[in-house]
Image (tube, rainbow, N blue to C red; front, side):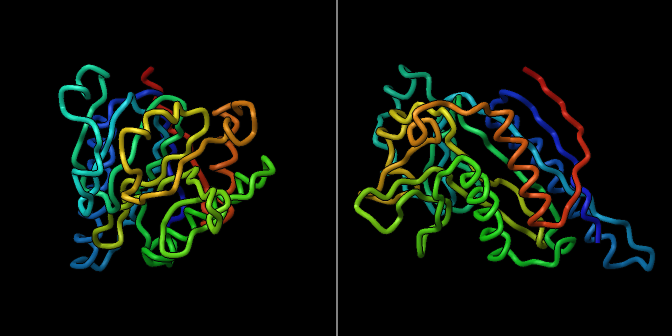
Length: 238
């Protein structure tokens, strides 16, 4: 099992471009797995982890409902917000400046886990990062992601998670609100969940933590939880 993960940080990148990067890695890993089924000599499958930050965009998962976008097309254009249908799980969410987006494109067979376990471990990574900032990130029963005070009337999501898998290869991932402008969530029903809010680390802490510091903590906890090691292939394009 290959537990080395190539780390790529693109800086600011359009959603479509980041999707295509993921897709390319996703198909490479799948093609190796298909080849390995028919060959005696096995080629180790690689793993990738993409950090990125997107310009303003709403993305709708394959199980989402378009009525959860509350702005007409004309207003989206006026506000210069993209709207994209995508093939991850989940409903609608927002990506934009001040948000750390992580796309692990990994072979779950390398880590001996299934998709349900994978999502729980992703949540655990973020929960441990929140703990370093004295924030109590928690799971909400029946809902993915990481929440603050999930079992109270003030429940609010701080990190959304939505993934896709095929042949136990993953793509898409998580979006952690660090210093995100939360007013953009007012134009959607986030993740299709009514009567629950969203928040950011900045809102909870009263200051915006350094995003590079947060990313370093994410990688450290991901490596610990998944028993992985990272090799930096940083490709900053911004």
